[in-house]
Image (cartoon, rainbow, N blue to C red):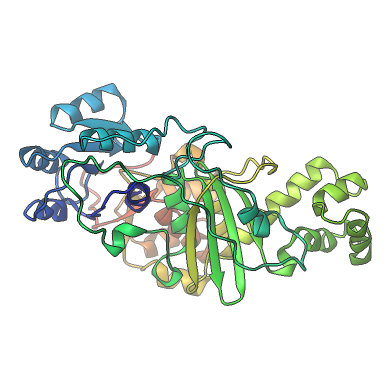
Length: 426
């Protein structure tokens, strides 16, 4: 969330300083110049939010508080009473938050107006003739909509600028932006993170755009809209739509070539529907399976590069109805290997419910064995204990627990004694 908000602010011309803890934020107040505005995600892990808000207020720095834990008018009133200048409950529209930040800085966003849809940081994305530059489909069509195995898989051209800079009427001229402020979190090495963690971050930010993943000659793209998966594409021939249809024995490779020759330039799915070889529901099911398979194949990538590009997906995508929680949980349980799980999930740690889960329990489609295992995660048991008490196999148990850690449904905690008060799932 911090990285994506920083990306949005830097695209609007702001210099951004990201602090990962409350204590580091307090320490930053000892340096000059002071920030013109601060955005704080509550609750903080190391200090009370009231302490940081109060220190910012005393230093003359207006605070915008955001939270997915504190909800409703009573929580908002309490946060404002502590000294915050404004409060946003997750999920929220980034444009509104940035407009509030600009107002507190003594300026305003340059005539952007309201976005047509919520695109985290990618504003404005107006229709042709409206404010900002429209995002053409071509950069996506090169990978996301081309399903011919022989299609060109060269890198997509860069997307045009997504927003104008803030007007030069801020209270004081900003210092030169740091490398981190220029594009924090947009790209990096998969050795430092994982695809599931990236998808969780995009879901929490309700982001819209394309996550591009590369490892050697392999390139894959996962499109998300408002934090949900809407399409995926790959330059691996076996993961293309036509190859999947042949593998499912809907037609032979020769018949597929014949269908394609009948409509050069058209989508393979459209051609198969016209030829009566595929129903609309059958096509929807196959595309949904294709998206899941492409995404799951990247979950254990331990090397390679990623880049997230804020933009609007192309028109004409099928409405898949995929949920990020299902994609993550099912994918990790299916695709995770035991050696990787043993490395990623230390046997001695204790797990308990997160105070700020990325996904609510009702969003998780749990099997009976998974629901039983989740009910045991109250902080009193180590991973070894949980696996021993589970009704699932060792690999399934570890995969499920690791998935919930990544999805921030479970947190690592210090050992909780059985005779102490604790929080649990009911």
